[in-house]
Image (cartoon, rainbow, N blue to C red; front, side, top):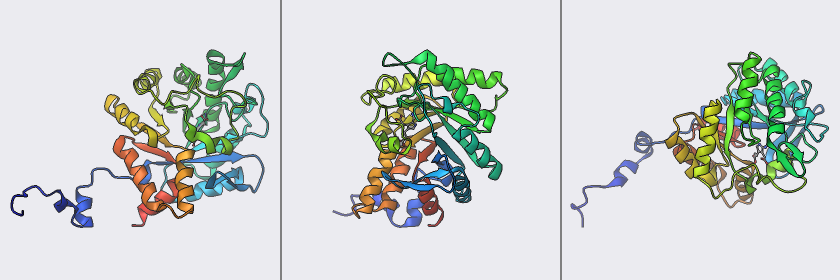
Length: 326
Ligand code: PBG
């Protein structure tokens, strides 16, 4: 059985140079966005237990680390704040002297070309841990909108380059666009967490952000993991309301959603490789059960292959090093 085989796909896998020539998807350091958690205090750099090598930073230490990230060629960071005090209406989320607002000012002063994206949500700032205003056990959509919009505006005033609402309230993108435009921030883009699922993969993040809901869960505002058409409706609404970049979150268990979104809407698409996706690989790698570099690059590449243009990932710094030293 020899000459019959005219088609031999293995010809194009013969060596690395040939494989590189026919490679369909490329992962680039410019695709990556690195998330940070900023806390009050000074000289703080504390590892988050459920997320090895991810830290809580005070502003001074944060600025140093962001410099490193910038030098690695990573173009953007996503900022989460952990305030020292919380209340029913998340006042610290929109305080001009809030932790995120101060952190943004410090980063933009030290590293002006780093793109600073801020997560816009109330869950880290509310005493009950929900993403909005709670009325008789239910997160009230329209009362929350006003606070979410105020939060986004306060971030823009502090110098944020882009705002990323992650609360999943109906109509928040439109409200944010309206307030930003009326206050003169027409050039600040909105990256919308459009198809954000009620996922178990956020477990480690809730420890990192101290944002676990104190009662109930987030299923009355985040999406049911069983749904796919609904993701397209959510994304369509956000685009209509003025989203510049849309997002699918989490990533690995939702690659089909990423693909459908990219096929349906020709807009920049981000995906969030979330905390649980990070920690499960990290834990297996620490045990020696997986080759970390191989599986991380494989997973990130699969997100690009599925259609994501950019990836928010806690692996960004490692990936940047692996991608630039071959
Ligand atoms: C805030 C928010 C969450 C994440 C990003 N923004 C948590 C949640 O909705 O519970 C999760 C990120 C991660 O798991 O890495 N609403």
